[in-house]
Image 1 (cartoon, rainbow, N blue to C red):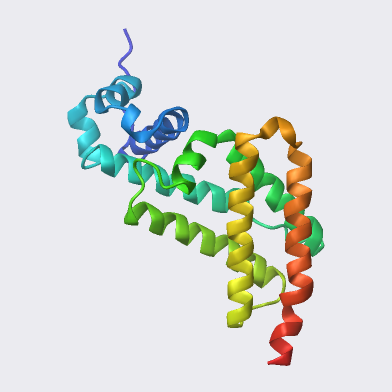
Image 2 (image 1 turned 90 degrees about the horizontal axis):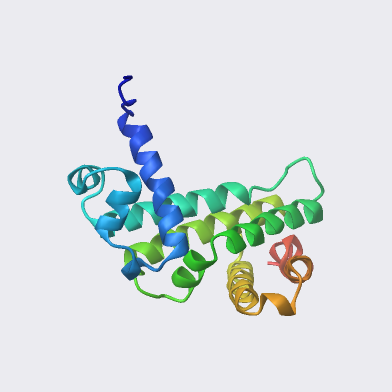
Length: 199
């Protein structure tokens, strides 16, 4: 009988994070026990604690992985015109939100499992995505009015996605994306590079 394949530390950890995305994507933080995680991952609780200090540490690591993925999938295509690049990134963002709806609701509404550390991870991902839009639009050093405007748009987009998840049948996904694209393009027209040139 062949021996079970032993995974490297990195591969084992990556598989556990994948499992965390699945478990916390289906159930809220308090609804997932350490026993659930160990059983689903085919590991002992001792081994789980070897990789992550406790359930909280496992959850935070999973959030970091989720944030890394959303930043990755929303990369803008440098070979496309700005509007098409924005539309493609937002299409990926909305798809990601849809596929991780439980997670997204919990994180954006500050539910169980959300604290200052988790909020910092979310904020870092938000900054990365906003900075990407600004740089793609040619705004390397945004003025205060531009920072306020574009982070305000990010808040609008996040809230719009939350409302859409709760009332998905009221609005096709394509309309949500176009609404967000239109709002961002309008913002770029009024608070884009020309604002900086007037200061």
